[in-house]
Length: 149
Image (cartoon, one colour):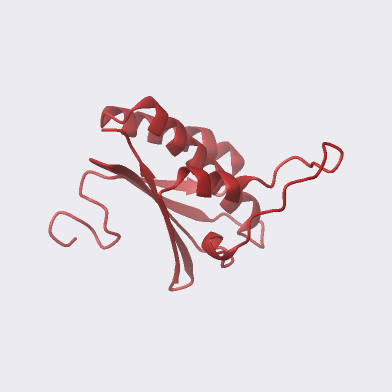
């Protein structure tokens, strides 16, 4: 802990969760985050954005980051500041930098459309800033979501 923030940059009152790499862990994690941000006075529009970004990020980590069937942990830290909500996820999965991936090409017709594949589009639409780094064999994704005053 450095001052009133830990080494991740999170304040002492941040919500910290360990999320299992199982789809059934999504609901409880999202519920805990919604409760935390609502208790900090975050407006419904920003809560919606937080919920959407969190679910997209966790879903992608759980579904694509791990090359084996073993249990892995996703360390989730969330904190609220006057102008933003910060989501930080750390995992030991394969390296994936969403800031360096191109957006998918939209289908030209309904016949070409396939379900899914919009995670990066949604992440970039609702995030004010996205930071990715690989640190000691772990992905660290930090997403800044603006909130109304």
